[in-house]
Length: 241
Length: 205
Image (cartoon, rainbow over all chains, first blue to last red; front, top):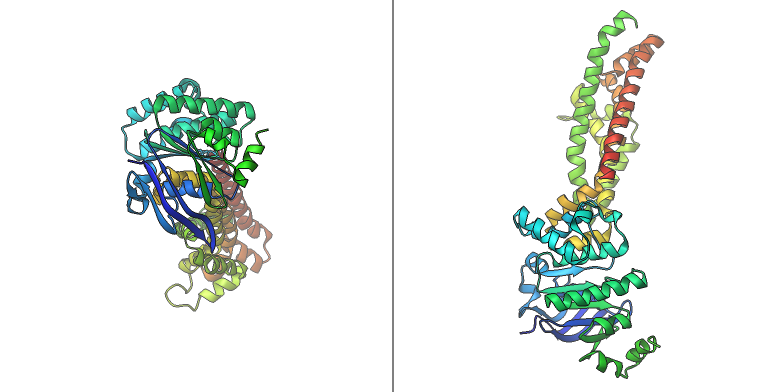
């Protein structure tokens, strides 16, 4: 069964259509990259997946159930979310930030602590050095790693990435992309990854969806995407040269 | 200091403190929750902030005067004074609570929602702690002004350090005016310093 399914999803706000009749499914284990310019509706699609927004028409199904029928809090806690500006709590330590969802879910404190240490290790941030730091004491790349660790904390089957590496310098970005691929390989998570960077899309996606003013054009794999001939696809591909 | 003044000093300072502390306690208990409500009810913003702003523009002596003939809340004495002081203290607390919460980084709030925090958890664990220095700054401003305004309480029989000042003015007795003004000023400085210290502690955390 598809983990996520968009069925004829449209979203309007103030009479403006942000998404129009979008259809796609995400199967377990794959990384669907939604590629598009700013304002193409990528982030909106992401926010619909975890019930931060609901479709004006059509249905978004997660694990076969429409998002409107999920408990709104339960759905969000089952889905890891990494956002562009990281959104770490500035008054929480790294440990508290990473342990947030498990703590909200009522895990016993020793379990939370063990989970946090394991995740920080996996993200290449030795717990002894980093657990007690505050976000402002970290570099941009470290902060984003903590953001990823926080999203992974409660071991959600699905992860959403909203241009997570957009604000990083090119070297750190490539480092984190590599780490993303390792994670994907080791943990077999399912991800929807939003970006405006075509290189990133080709590198990380098992499938690529191109959003143009709220309309979606799907490519079965990065190779197929390279051969798309729509105007928008050509515009993105030409930026590769 | 003249013995006649020294005798009254302790009592009047005590009365003054009671006026300020009761008024501030009431203003905080009303202002902070109302400020939180304002962040969630857009329609309440204009009327409530407007009311609190208008209160600030009424000269304090006039406000005490207006309150005297009003049944239940008015009359001569401490209660009327405290009500008037609360009305003055409300605006800075209300406004700073609202502004403090509203200016918490949207990325932080959005990620709190995305992590599946309920709105109560978000308020207690994210918005209030991050807004605390701003809210406290409002409380500090309100406290300092209240200490000053409370000296006018003596005009309607509310007691406090204003008793010295009014008596001193009536009998052209500078020593007596100073006996009221200096302790009130010291009290204001102490409150400003103490609350400022707490504020800095909070914003560093």
